[in-house]
Image (cartoon, rainbow, N blue to C red; front, side):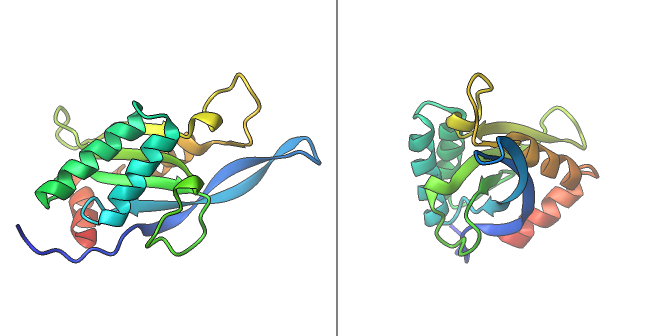
Length: 166
């Protein structure tokens, strides 16, 4: 197994979400932090495990954790990239799992020569259902929009960014 230096979650950029203002009885624009998680960092893997538990156990977030844990055990991330949208504003070396709003996992597409495949995406369940008032919304849309913007070009860009974090 290669020795790799890992630094935990890497801040990518602020992403737009909407937060409900009870005083104004309307959604207002806000920002959340999009971070890339390192499956070779035990703190990030543990954060994903706690997130999966917080999201309800047998969920898509649990799939993300299982894949990250497997990569950690192998000591290789392979073609996997992991993301989280969080209310946390700084100090991403140790993610506060109570602040994680959504998680996503992507990899190179097995079917499309130049594509990226979204393997798993889950928003914290309390913010995912339109049947009740959600305090925060546009979580999943923000993650997907970042992925579309970033990986619009091709697989080469995916590999360039992959090598930067590992």
